[in-house]
Length: 103
Image (cartoon, rainbow, N blue to C red; front, side, top):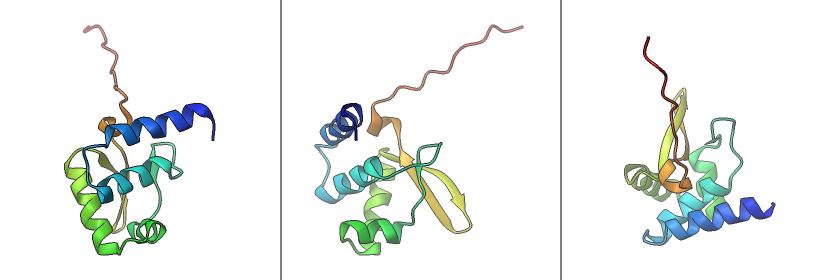
């Protein structure tokens, strides 16, 4: 992990300072886990829960709270499994859509 990646993780950790411990753990897990090109963590909630020692029920409830608070967003759904990625609120990134001249 290079210094830029470490700094990004520290920034996410700092931004989540007002959250509960479980909420911060879920956000940081998504921040640290490998992602696909769209930024989604392609891993089931049950597997992620196991990684951090949470029951799948507690993990799912906590992730739902984090999504509702705007820290994670659903990226895609395959069959009955939803995959999530960090939102702009988590990353601090600002998405700017370039304006085009009307014709």
